[in-house]
Length: 186
Image (cartoon, rainbow, N blue to C red; front, side, top):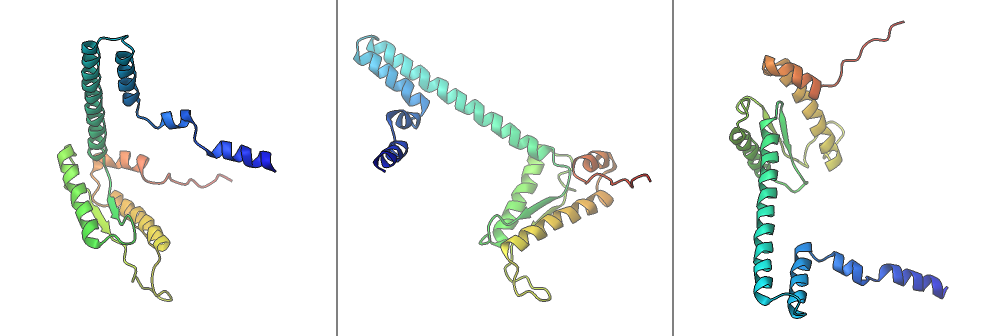
């Protein structure tokens, strides 16, 4: 019995390697440089120069990563070709917050240079706990999410059969619409 508790305590107690793995890598580099200075393996001026160089290199890498992520986000907006459903993220999100996110979508589409930014429908679907229908007093969150999915499907069909530009129909049909079901040959 005691060996089991000892094994469990060893598995749950943190060790030095687990603690070190939580330290950012750049801090380990700074620590190594400071240790080399303290051990007189590296002159102070060289250590200061190395710390400054690491600081600028890490900053440049962060800026490059941020630029890459910004380009990826812009490409997401630039490549939108169908209706965008802006639904509530959580049950307490207000209709005004959903409307603000829909406006942000429209603005992002415009800024990305999407040539269809003005004709792509952006549909706001805020959660309303007092949705009523025959036999139901309120709609729960799971019911709302199912209805949002159905609304997205319906809007895709309306877009494809209605306002979708002809040059987008093939791409939209292959990317978004369900495949056509063929009748089995008998």
